[in-house]
Picture 1 (tube, rainbow, N blue to C red):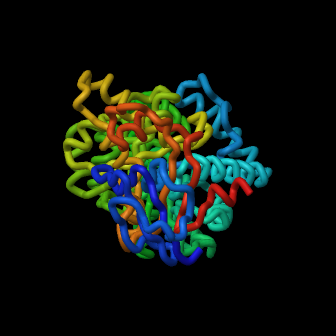
Picture 2: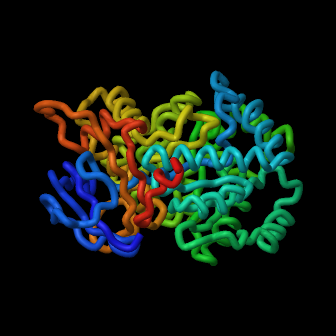
Length: 423
């Protein structure tokens, strides 16, 4: 595809900008111009006119290789889900890599079908990277690190620094980085070494932070199931158990715009201030948090405090679908129920988190997340049901009424990935 035009009844350029009608010119994978009104009658069309055209979603947290793990622990508590569902599943996949390949392929197909053009993936096996590159999606892959079981921390760190180079699988559309899983699976010395290793190479990191009450209790007071586990293993001394995970990362200099903090369900006002001051993005995964009953993240307070917020689905092991429409609605409904205020968050906040917020978290805000000249032609077309005298503006309609089934085209870099998937 070299050039063409996209015309819509409603062209949503960003969370606060709508042209009704509007159209844009695409040339060599990028947006050349955006216009209000209708295009010239003889302009070459890239897809049917009408409907809603908006930036492609950015899913800022997923584990694509776990696509075959749906339903493995639907009714288990978080700690039991980790121990009795996730660990056996990962063990099976490590012995049979095709399970991970099939999972990644299924997840990628679901992303494209749901209007997601960019994804931040992380896993202990880079099996998804060539599949992502082949799919045409934009993305980031963080190679996960788990250091809590190392019998010798110094030897583990030395081995990591000597041999933990990322595979030569990256492409212009797929960035590579590291994913030290969490502070409890990567004790402070390991965490510091992994982040330093990434920063020397100017790579990003993604870290699960303060996801569960068990994690919070362990780091704040040194009690609970995690403390019992590490005490029995003789490893409790590797951890600092007197303050929150966010404050520990801040004290070690491990916050910043190159670190994607995921979940942050248990954080408090002091943590929020540290995240905002360090310009550390937070990736919120509302449906996964609810599915695993880990709590309700203080999203309204994060936004009010100046934290840059992104939205992610997490994996099919903890959500039924990789559906950003459902994540946006869940984010709003949960926060309104938690704060008991309809004004705590609006559709514009959810839309921003699902598009430009995710792009910012991945360092791609100059490439994707909005529709404007110079940016990549990453956009989605929706065919929303016609409503007479609809009161909702197009952004609100997408957030409150949007469905995966309404996605007719998913373009990334001017390439219609959904059409290719359906061919």
